[in-house]
Image (cartoon, rainbow, N blue to C red; front, side):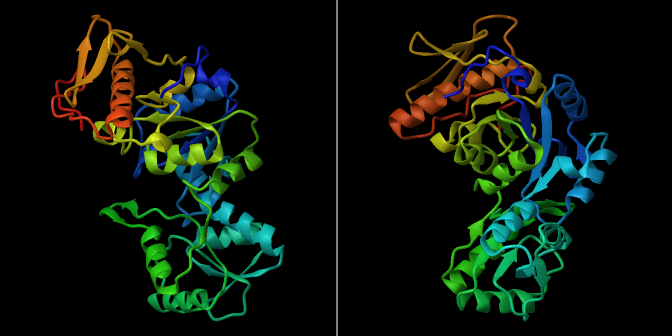
Length: 340
């Protein structure tokens, strides 16, 4: 269940690890207010890191993109799954190890940074590392798959099945991973979320003793935080809507929930069990006969508290009944629209 923080999160935690797409930007556009919320968090003394499963771009390129959107960012503020994968390889094989690089410029840059030698798919190597790279050639994928099947160790930057593009949602690196796994009968070590190496690498690089993961995806950002043993804040600016929230299993449930990054500078109250349901700030929610019902009890009830009450009522029902509640009657407060 959601937890309470009597302090603003900027005081309770000293590092915010921000996912990018759906949290800071969506495609080529900044999320409304994101730059200002990030600036406010920093002004309150919180460190901010930008983390991404996308291994195709270097930290320097990602930082430049953020600056173009009005978000202050240095390359040292950005941590990618490619950097986390390079760390895994360096720790296992040592600096100077020769590694087949099956990915884009971001992966090549991360290997160089870690003192590893990136080689082509036919060269002598101690391992293969793979990541998203739209220019990858099929013949190189085939050759790497054969070598992995023959026993060459394999590290994958991430297992994301989809990636947003300018022409729609497209197959991500996880599709390649699944294909090679089926062919080779081998499972890679994974660096990106929801595996924990990316979050560990972020703390190592940026610092912080009380980190907080901030994301919009339950199955990568929030589950990744749980795997790394850190608290999390779910923001509703990306892919998670009502249907995804109420269906979340225990490992996909955030510590806190807010509409956007403004939640970093606020205290958070968790719903309380009252009268056969859950209550917070002018909302009372319950699941009756399998159906989610939320009643407004105060005129000044806040939208964020509606989402928190919904989460508490739905998760309790899911855990007790083993089923996701019916949400067909739910309406987002202030809009009159059916919650997605």
